Length: 100
Image 1: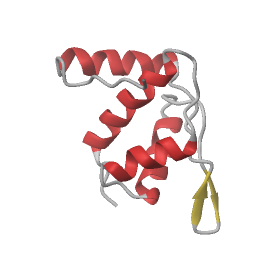
Image 2: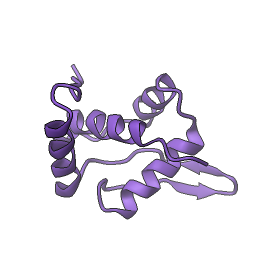
Image 3: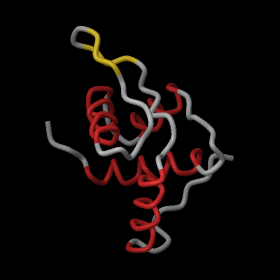
Image 4: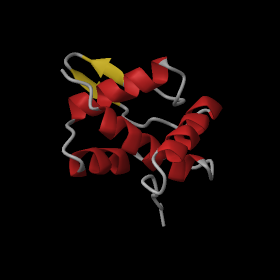
């Protein structure tokens, strides 16, 4: 499996829109975002595991058999929020998302 770094960057910005208000995103919102960006459940789960391991998000999906469950990443940690700020600074005006 190839890691889609563009998706991960977009996913972090998407999460930041919820995390800044301390709101935990729902699993169906995460799956809708991923699938609308051409990313399947397996790749989404792998991305979440990677981000959790790097202490960027607060929750990790569980693997049950060959499937992942609980695709709710929680919120961004302080390190995650700082990473989004760094990405936003490098990619001026590219990372804007509103959860309203």
